[in-house]
Length: 80
Image (cartoon, rainbow, N blue to C red; front, side, top):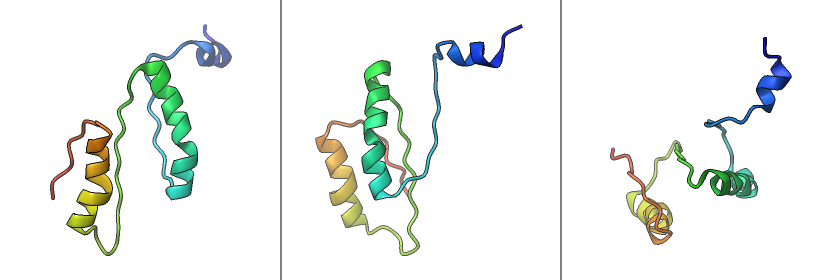
């Protein structure tokens, strides 16, 4: 029988972490994601954001999609 401590000590081949963060928390915690990418080689990140007033398509392109493209991040934006 494996104890909980022994199970926690075993290396895990896959990890899934979901979290909600505001701008400050995301900026402060992004280094943790980078640490995981260093160990894994790559990480798969899924972003979901909601705005009651909606996202202007021009702003979304300039502020989000283009910077991701410039960083050479491969992504598939969800189309409305």
